[in-house]
Image (tube, rainbow over all chains, first blue to last red; front, side, top):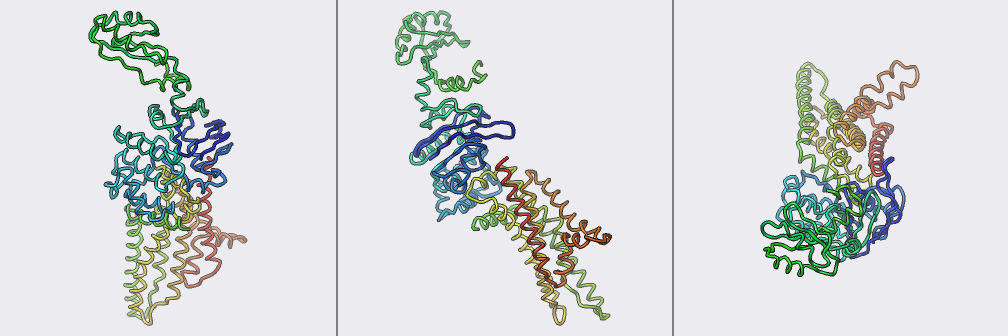
Length: 308
Length: 247
């Protein structure tokens, strides 16, 4: 559905993306993960036919984005990062306008259908300018879904939504991703982990890693790290934990919690728990740290914030 | 073609969502109404002493004259504001050709002018009732064709300039400056030149209207002149959008 080879884009003297190669199949949700300015939006804009690449080739839904731009645009639904909307228009009228541009038959029914999908049916008669940021985001999403596109390209789709809406939108994207190709960019790691079948990590215009989220984790995760908390003073806690065989990298945090790690697949938590309780501590928490993908990300992108 | 109509329709509706349509309508219709009343009053005075019957064409001249100053306000935000708000990104990724986008914007503005021009038809209709054997309808129709052609050219050039800028006020002043130059200044030196004065006269926006169509003479050259300017404006507009893509 999407095939990109040797894609390069220069803005004047600055090179935004360099020689990108990747593809995405039908029924696949591919995440584009990278820090700000990595070239995510540039790549997505090329794929939507908004601007041509400086070099390389991109085939979307079987058409070349430069040579057959109009055919590509007919088959792509696009949600830009800032969700540009006509604030002085009524939600329904706006979607109807976009639908007419895309020559959708029975446009009124389809607009109602899409509004129902994004949960905005009760705001159909309201002005876009009066909607909250999250609702505008959903109007943008509705606009992208309107013509049942083969390829859906979403630039930061859950930004600005409240947690409940984030869950809903992710659910919606997963649903759509079953039959169609979805390419979404995000800088939220748990989002990529949550919805995407595959993740492309991009930094400074280059793809630095490409794999499923599980594989990425397994490949880069040397050990599983766990945080341990007990009630009251715990000066001796670290040394107690160290006594368990196989435990490595024990560290006492400022708030009194102790972090340690062990080789993956060899869960030492029960042993540590027994040891801690028999030493007379009241165990409060024993939790694996869920930040792993973040660490992978920082590892790969070599970001300075690693040493925070 | 359907895309042009879709965009034009939205733009036309949008004029009435903002005060702009009412402000421009007021700014054109009020002076025209006052001018019309003056013409009627003066000719009724002179008619008592056997003066000539009034003509409706001077009112159309006023319409065109006011459009020099008001049409930049109609066209300034058509594309520049889309670029500023980012909505241009959605239109540029919709299956719409750049030319269709620009032409749709132009048509939307032109439809507003058509509506205003339709309202001004009351002036010749009223005048016709007070003049025997009635006003010269052929001159009147020729004058209206001229009026629409001038407006078409003004709006075309305005849309083209609007596509170049992201700031609507930059678009406004550039458009106003261009119209001012083309209407008042380009043929100023024509009378002092031994050669080439005709070329400058031909370039002027005003001569093709005031010296021919508004007096009942329709020349092919005048029609070609205004249609060429409209086409030039739309071409500049679509090229500017195209350039945005490559930048």
